[in-house]
Image (cartoon, rainbow, N blue to C red; front, top):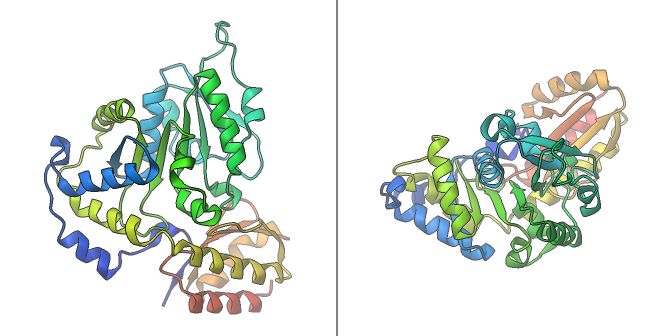
Amino acid sequence: MKIDLRSDTVTKPSKEMLECMLNAPVGDDVFGEDPTVNELEKYAAEIFGKEAALFCSSGTQTNQIAINVHVTPGGEVICHKESHVYKYEGGGIARNSGASVRLLDGNRGRISAEDVKNWINPEHDVHFPLTQLISVEDTANRGGGAIYNFDEIKRLSELSKSLKIPLHLDGARVFNALVETEIDYKSYASQFDSISICLSKGLGAPVGSLLLGNKSFIRKAHRVRKVFGGGMRQAGIIAAGGLYALKNNVNRLKLDHQNAKELEKTLLNCDWVETVIPVETNIVVTILKNAEKRDQIIEKLNSENILIMPFGPGMLRMVTHLDVNSNDIDRVCNVLKKITI
């Protein structure tokens, strides 16, 4: 039996989730007539205190729609240099919206208000693109699942409001952050002009993400989704999986975090490991003493039916999720302890 730690996107829907999907009432969502999609959008908007939501096929789509609504061609998006919207979305900021990007350094994938303030382009100098959007990622994937400090988010929000520049959240794993910090969803969400949340990672739905914002923003996002080819018809079948996930699979994310910390403990005692980026949620990033041994370690684990991912030169990533239990983690730890290179 394989243990798949490559990503939390590999989860399979549970029997209970599949039953909800099978029995979901459906309609034509492009006409706004799918009752399950409508229920999902309403539920998500309500728990975050936003006016409206839009169901989309992926987090990349929700992020790219948000960027397209917020910016105009020739504008500039500020984000961390390792952020998903820049690094892993196929150059979509340039391709879809004709915008440039200001890439910032920061701590484990996170940027500060002070970082951003120093890189706002002068509005009346025609040599520079207009700064039109600030984008943050919580948790930060490339930072090993790092959680933003809420006080820093507040400072970023205050800055964005003072400059009249929208603040977008790539919240692909925002529930991982919120179950750890226990910050009120509505207080957290009020800091952002738009929020993308993913249903198909730790929450275990097979497909889908949601984009949240005010009614005017979501109305514009509907149009962009259509232009991007994202209009879906009887989408309630997949929306039902997302609705089940939101209602049942959030609090259990703490189990994934506990499992990730068990992996961290074991890895720190392996003589081939230089260090592990401190584990805060469900992502475990290991830095090797000998970068050239990365693929060899991946192969050794694969031979034991354990799948993990390379994460850059001399780096490995493991991600815990609802299809990996504590017994699986014990097995992985035992294999890790036996690896010699």
